[in-house]
Length: 128
Length: 294
Image (cartoon, rainbow over all chains, first blue to last red):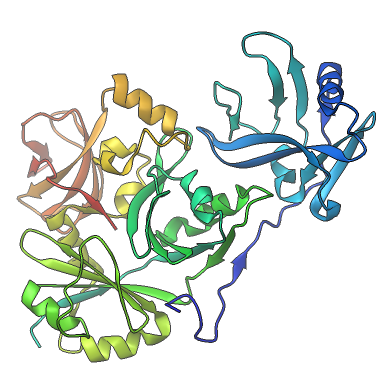
């Protein structure tokens, strides 16, 4: 069993406690692109925007269109039928972000401006 | 029993478990632990986005769990960082083991250390930890002596010391620092100086090929075209000197991080061979041959 198991004790689990009400904005370009990408799956799918540790600046953005997860730990905003999910654990990192889309051959794609970030990586995927 | 010295460390213990824990911790540190095997440990660093060291960790894999030994002075910040970056869809749980676990180092000759290990005929492997009676052992060999690190439950520490170390000598922090300085082992006194890994000679704990981690851009730039502004060295003084910041007579800024009186570590800018004079004392200095972290 080893040092960490058995022995009649369990270690205290550390959890993320800071949860804030999230409000994000989405530009017209980003909304149009989200609708295009969803291709009519708005009823069953959503866009999840999240943050995870890593990248050059401390945190990495992650965006995925997935089947709607159990909404229990998420905050949801609806943009003309497209639902954006943000997990409570990411709420303090992502509150206030603006989601934009740039339709250019180089450096194009979704782009996040984050008021909580004191620095951002050159590629735009990492912030801290 | 032959004579050894032992030291009870002040350590923070954090446990990460869940199937994504290695991937998660790997994104935060300067080394690559993706291939870490059971009972293997990796010494590594956590840096901020400016590339400066914020904590040093020894990461030990115990089956599906990772045990992270860090510096208690910054443990709260390190744990906050680890917890705040867990992806919503990842299976990672972070636990605090500070009240449960302890670490002891026993130092002595090879022959005497063999008697410390409570099972005959087991020679410890330098690369892997060895488990016996719910305690973890690892040996490190230095030039003139060897050290066995032991991780055990805090509730067992008294009994263990009585059984194994009773005829041995408990080291004070000052004596432990003496051992550190002799063997090039850095500690929090060095990490807290807001330095880059290269400035402390810790490049071997930085893997620039593993992909992005906080501070990686700075480390990569330094490696490709940078020049170190500061460097850690070992000093010998003709009089006792306390840790602190000094200006030398020849205009150097001297930051003594660890001093055992007349020996220690210091950080200095662009130093050649010259001796350093600070008021009425004189420091000679040398490069550190091998540098370890604890």
